[in-house]
Image (tube, rainbow over the protein chains, first blue to last red):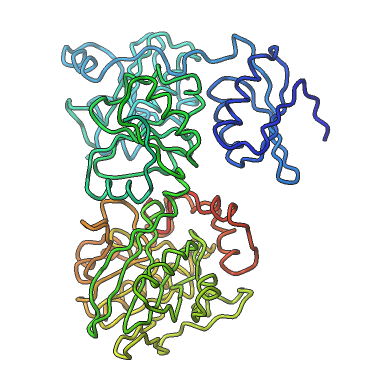
Length: 190
Length: 376
């Protein structure tokens, strides 16, 4: 397979973090849409370049390996594709949510942990939809209601909040720190 | 004081002494969630190094000012880069793990478990980063090493310091989570290498069979290692009774869990063997035996010196895996098992002598936790 590239970066013989440091630098000089080939011998560069692409928003195309030389291919994303903010911006702290619940406000608490985690203790009245099922089950939720998404530490609920926002839910907040630090009332399945 | 390299050995000492430790782990998120340095007083922050290439400004608020910070990555280079940024940002006590998670994965911490009746001793080598346990049994100048890791210098150096000779090396079973140092030790020391024949049907080298009834003696003949055929984790799994005091259970019985029967693709058949071993064969043994397994799953199992051990009788009361009815047991050993260990098929093939990866590849294959128990 011949792969057409706009720039070749030689990072052979360099150890972590240099392959990624050099890739990041080279990427700055490319135009959006251009493709770079990064040659590296550090095996760890494979997982890292994929993770870096995911975090920076650039597109990871693939990697070939020939005689112990890894060739990673990346396409530079346009400004609008590059992720500026990694996390879902709208968050609420545990105790702020607690205040709302104590005041009897009509809000939806959505628990996106696995059913077993939910069974062993959740915020009273919380609705359970595991993160993996959210895509298919989002229509069980009311687009207009205030939705507070919670998981154990705020990571899965961050992803869930982004998913819901993408689907047009406007009133979604991610609960941090999540259940791991929840000190309010807990309900268990019987 | 600035940035300072710290060895896996020193980090182990900090973890075991329950010193408060803040770890900034700069590996990518997948690697971190798979496997990390754990301890009762260890707090983590995971931010990949590639998000910190230009500095640490964005995470300064999340780092403690009053505690030592240990920066950890896969091999060392990235943590040094981040460590320098931290020093530039005004942090005073910044440590960097020497050799990164690779050296953490390989470090062995020797702990004395106890004395043998004739004056010898038994030591446990705790591979804290991976949860592997191996044994060094010494009597009258002779040694048996059990379930050796591939970093065999640890055993040969230890033997040299004590002026003793490694005579026998054996594996309780064909390992799927780490590469055995058995053959290498045999080459280096001239020791005899034993394997259970039922696990060794496909091995490509000569070995001495480890068979029930064929005791192995070390030093004074009173110290015998009695093999006991106890299948379940693998078809050949063999336990050892040392000096009528210690029961080396391999991957059959752990302190907080039991072995998984599925790593060679035969969960159904081997589940019955595992049940027989745990619920019949071990039960007939003296409940005063000290169980010494080949793995631990969590740092909560480590004693004050970092050792892992328990009385067999206590495990029959406390270990959930020994207190299930048949139905529960069958479910526990076949459903919801944790993911398999990294590269477990290649590791089995390496241990059979079918493939011979180089050092760097062997190191990569062993990255991650052992995952030989039914609980993750």
